[in-house]
Length: 159
Image 1 (cartoon, rainbow, N blue to C red):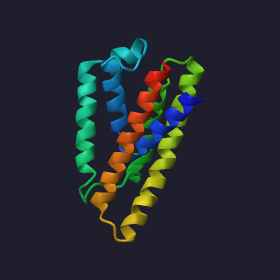
Image 2: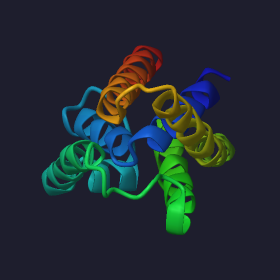
Image 3: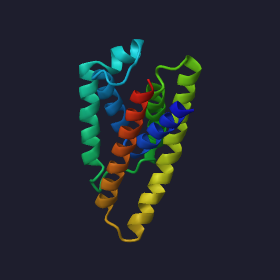
Image 4: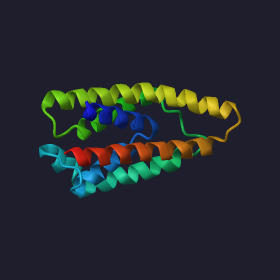
């Protein structure tokens, strides 16, 4: 059950910043602080993959603050986030049996899709009330980083 909560949390974080959870998961696998097996270690523990994901996440953190950046649900972006959320959910439940990993992927995907719409509505609500969009974006960054950090730390403790 705890793994499914972590998978859902990764989906939520992916809704906020699509690459940040994968980048931090990959970095944690690469550093050996998140046990993983087989293809997960080979692919996401690879130095170049980790670097590419971290670079992409950093660029996304910057681009999100620009006014011309499209919202998180336009042009299929919510489906893209659901796919990445599913992957993050699967990775966080990697050491479980296959049905658990599949459930983790499903939890991550559903959470990412739903949270994309919820976070967009919340962000619009805050800006409609006069809060500056960059400040809201920075708060989202903090929420995403804190969520991923918490559940990665918890996953390391339980594995």
